[in-house]
Image (cartoon, rainbow, N blue to C red; front, side):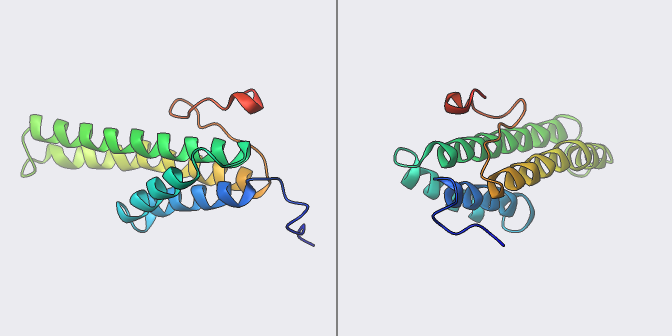
Length: 134
């Protein structure tokens, strides 16, 4: 039986929504879900409990890193012959196989931790959560 709202850790709802928006940005509605995540972060950045604040920081940071890597890949494509070149498929396949799938895996782990009411720090791209020693 799931815990009642009174038994859930403070900020768990914020954490779950942040992780869900992050995954939605990666898989279903890129761009739109990112804007919703930014708006959600802006609304709760200072008043969220530590658990929610930690997950919000992780998802926004990972989304920004993912966006920067996507821009970098596009620059590499342009540098190595443009979009008409056969080299474009090399970068696209490598990006989706290595980078995009890693971000999805991290988001899935983050969502599982949020649903369990536990903090999570994304490796390499995550922000510190000093409240939890992460």
